[in-house]
Amino acid sequence: MENVQEKLNDISKLVINGQLLDAFEKYYHDDVVMQENENIPTKGKAANLLREKEFLNNITEFREAKMLSSGVGDNVSYAEWKYDYTHREWGVRNYKQVSVQHWKDGKIIKEQFFYGN
Image 1 (cartoon, helix red, strand yellow):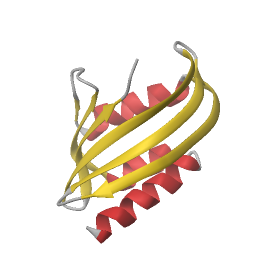
Image 2 (cartoon, one colour; image 1 turned 90 degrees about the vertical axis):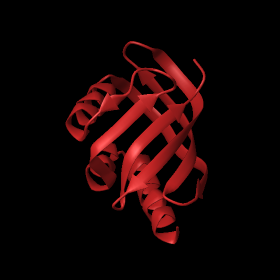
Image 3 (cartoon, rainbow, N blue to C red; image 1 turned 180 degrees about the vertical axis):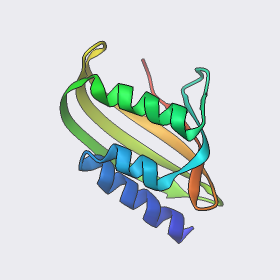
Image 4 (cartoon, rainbow, N blue to C red; image 1 turned 60 degrees about the vertical axis):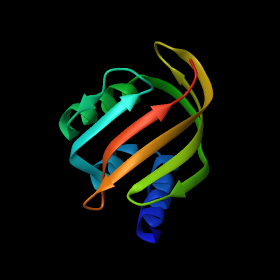
């Protein structure tokens, strides 16, 4: 469990420093499935990388990303985040989000994000 916590801490540092794509490359499994709330999941690293790049390209002003809390279990972890940015299509976004990660072979195989609209 300590190893997963260390990886979560490193992901946090990378995200806070604007290196989200580096974190994605380093810690996400090739077969990763990612899901926003109860929306249809996106499957595979290539498809999710494209989705992440599209998201980042639409941020016009980035003010803050901060991990508020985290926890680790048996090949599962969670992180509570606070985000503050302006998105080209969505406008100003200032919210908290919880992400739940399932780990396989030392990488995230499934991640689901929970947040209000």
